[in-house]
Length: 486
Ligand SMILES: NC(=O)c1ccc[n+]([C@@H]2O[C@H](COP(=O)([O-])OP(=O)(O)OC[C@H]3O[C@@H](n4cnc5c(N)ncnc54)[C@H](OP(=O)(O)O)[C@@H]3O)[C@@H](O)[C@H]2O)c1
Image 1 (tube, rainbow, N blue to C red):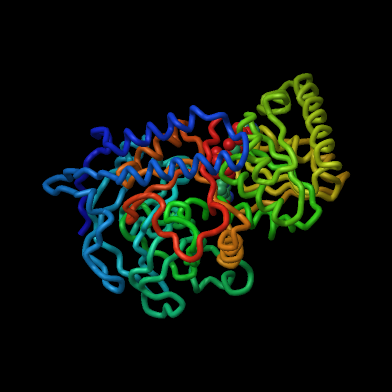
Image 2: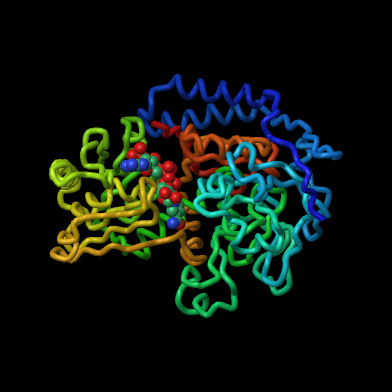
C-alpha cells in the first residue's frame, strides 16, 4: 500500500553541501562570462574538485510515524535482479497541486514490479525539466487524468534518468540486471499499429514518461518500457548522463529527421543557449552547417560560439520585432520594420537567408521566423514559450513556398542515433548544476521562479558528483559546465 502521509520539503536546515554549493556559485559568478571554452572547462574542473571535497550530507525526514533516512537513498538492500518492497520517491498528489515546493513531497511507496517488456531501473541521477513544474502546478491541465495515473493515484515525475537495470519483466532479452543505461522519455503501446510502421510518436497511446505517466525518475527506482533504454555513454558521470535526453533528443528529431538538416545548410536558432538551443547549435556544426543563435546576453553569445555557432545576435538589439498579439496596424508596421532589419542581420552573418529556422518561442518570434526563412525553407517548431496563438502574414509563406513543421520529442531510433553522437564525443551535455535528492522540490521551484541558469541534475543513487565514468579517459571533458542565466 502507498503511504499518503508526508512532510513538506520547506523545513530544511542548511547542510554543508548547501554551503559548498553557494561557494561554488559565488566562484562561478566571480568569473568573467564565457571568455573561452577552455575557461568554461576549467570552471568545470574546479567545481568538480569542490564537489569531490563535499560529500552529500543527507538528513532524515520524518514522514508521519516513519523517518525517511535520506542518507540511505544511495543504499539499496537488494542485488540486481531483486527489488526491495519499498522505495523513497518524491510524489505529487492531486490534492496538493500548486507551488512545486509544496506539491512535491517525500513518501515511501511500494516499489513497482516490471510487467511484460518493462524494466525497473535503479536511478543514479535524474534530470530536471520544466514539464514537472507544470505537473506540480496542475496546469495547463492536471496530469492525473492521463496514462497510468488513475491506476496508481500518484505522480512520480522525472523524464530524464541515468541508472542501472535492476529487474527485467517477461519478454525482455536485450537488457539484463547490471546494465548501465540512460532512459529516453517516450512511451507507446506495443499494440498500436503506428509503432510498427509509421512512428511511435504517432501512436494514440503515446505519452511522455515521468510527466504523462507516473513512475518517473525522482525515486530510487523507475519503471520504464524496455525500448526506452539506451546504453550509458561510458565517459559521462551519472549526472551528466541524466542531463540531456529530453532536450537533446527533441532537437535531434527537429533538425535531422523533420527538417532534413544537411551539410551546408544555414540555420537560425532561437534561444540558442537554452536547453534545446545548446544541442541545436552543436548538431548544426556536427552536420557541417552554419548557425546563427539568438540570445539575450553577451555571455550566452560567447558560449554558443564555443559550441560551434557562426555568430550570435543579441535579441535586446531587436526588441521591437517581438509580437505581443495586441498590435494596432500602425504598431504592426513598426514591428515588421524591425523584423526586416533582423532578417538582414541574419543574412549578413550566414551569407544568405536560413534554410531552417529552429523555433520554440512561439507568438513573439513566429512572424519573424516565417519572414526570415529562405524561400522553400522550413520553420521547425516544438514549443511556444511566449504564447501558442501564432499569427503571421501568410503571404510570405505561400508566395515563397515555405514550410511550417511541427515536432515533438523523438522516437527510440532517433534517441539511439543521437545518443551515439554523445558516446562518440561529438555532442556534449551542457550542465549548470548538480543538486542532491533532497533538493528535487527546490529545483522545480527555482525553475518555476525562473531563477535557474541552465540544466539541473539531481543525484539519487550516486553518492556524489563525477561518479559512474568508465572506459578510457577522453582527450577533453565529455560535458560542459555553464551558467547561462541572463
Ligand atoms: N515538444 C517537445 O518535445 C519539447 C521538448 C523540449 C522543450 N520543449 C519546449 O520548447 C521550449 C524551450 O525549451 P528549452 O528547454 O530550450 O527552454 P529554456 O532552457 O528555457 O530555453 C529557451 C530560451 O528561449 C529564449 N526565450 C525565452 N523567451 C523568449 C522570447 N519571448 N523571445 C525570444 N527568446 C525567448 C531564452 O533565451 P534568450 O533569453 O537567451 O534569448 C531561453 O533561454 C519550451 O516551451 C519547452 O516547453 C518542447
